[in-house]
Amino acid sequence: MSKMELFILLDRLDNLCNSAPRVPMTDRVLIDYKELRELVDGLRLSLPKEVKQVQEIVKSGKEVHQQVRAEADGIISRAKQEAERLVQETEVYKRAQQEAEKTLREAKKKAAEICAGADEYAASILANLAESLNKTMAQLEKTLAQVERGQQELAKAKQQQQVNP
Image (cartoon, rainbow, N blue to C red; front, side):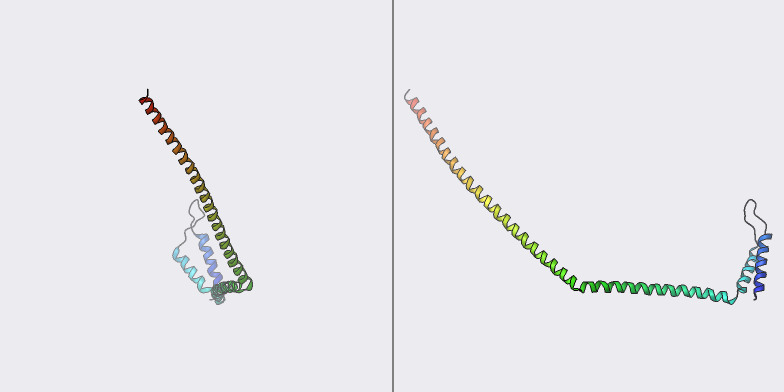
């Protein structure tokens, strides 16, 4: 179809809209569906082949864009992984790992020394306490023995008083 037919179909569509009865109190119109459908189909057929080609090119361009974007995302992801791997293999990374291990060993050693010192201190305190308690017990036993002797002498004195009034 020619460009002229395209303009004729557009004029018919315009006339259809302008001559259609209006729905009261709205901007809407009532259009014969069959007639509208014929005009739309005619317009489609009247479109130049170049328009259809452009439509296909745009569609394929979108598909190509999506493919390129997916490939780019994959390349970026692989590049990040490779960069991370390279960083981990560098000498700086290795030295940092060695320093971290050394620091950890030293911290464990220092913690063990502190624990051993605390155990020795606790043992010393307990030994001093035991010695002090032993001395106190010895003094208490002497005092108890003196009290018992005093009680015995009082009991003897009481018996003698009863015998010799």
